Image 1 (cartoon, one colour):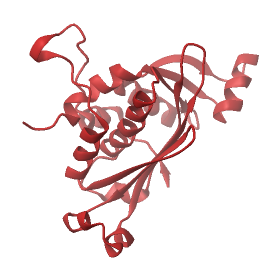
Image 2 (cartoon, rainbow, N blue to C red; image 1 turned 90 degrees about the vertical axis):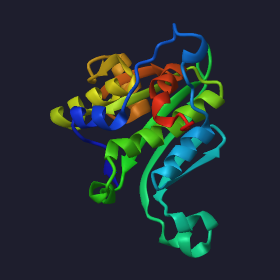
Image 3 (cartoon, one colour; image 1 turned 45 degrees about the vertical axis):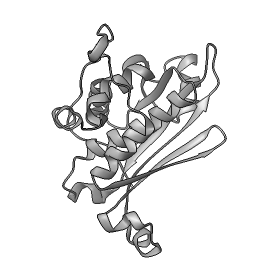
Image 4 (cartoon, rainbow, N blue to C red; image 1 turned 60 degrees about the horizontal axis):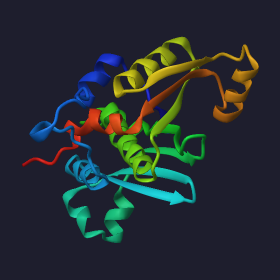
Length: 210
């Protein structure tokens, strides 16, 4: 599995992000996609996404699918190829549970596919975020890992485009940073987002065609 990485302009083009407008009402009410909306949209793109949970822990698993795979036959399942996964945990916190996004990874096979690697990342992230929403979480948190300056800056730009905001730079210079490093396993940029606003921001991408 290869870590998610691409240029910020490519991310913006692939995500087709619609800025949230919570002030609109009536027919223009912001659309919050359901889990069924997200799954249906993924199937229309030739993906099969599965959410697995074990207590507070979760994993989102994506494989390629085809029209013939809808029969759920064992041969179709065997032929499916994993293209990405996301993992995390619902973490108790003061003021309510938090969606802790631990990792998101894409397979190298996605580089040769006719769809954007960031588009795939959006599907994985949307399922994880909607799961947190359904579990009562109001906030999502992640660490844009700092393995290299170039890679790190691209991750921060990507997650900012997705709707996350920078909370803290974890560089190991303080006791607070050491606590973050124990939780996240490295240095990087801590970022948070309001879960409902994320879903509204991505709503246009998952809204059923009328």
